[in-house]
Image (cartoon, rainbow, N blue to C red; front, side):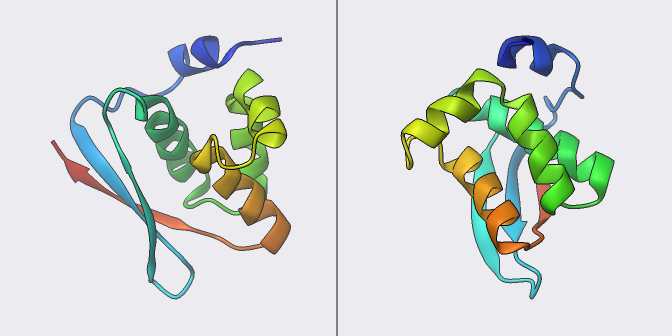
Length: 105
């Protein structure tokens, strides 16, 4: 099984970005992820998904859970511990789509 760290090595670099804002289908803000230690991995996964899929819907969220690798099982076992993974579970469960806007550093 490929680890989360190995998955990150294959993704786009996001060094020039400071944060991303997440919006629901109506354009309402539903979250934010900073590109900083502790959340930079989630930032890169969400950025990768948004670039590839044009937003994060069910298929993108499913891919995201695969990319989070070992952290996905930990998130399932410990709801609330990994909010950015929990959000992907919610997208799949609810059939919603989120869009992303990034701010430069």
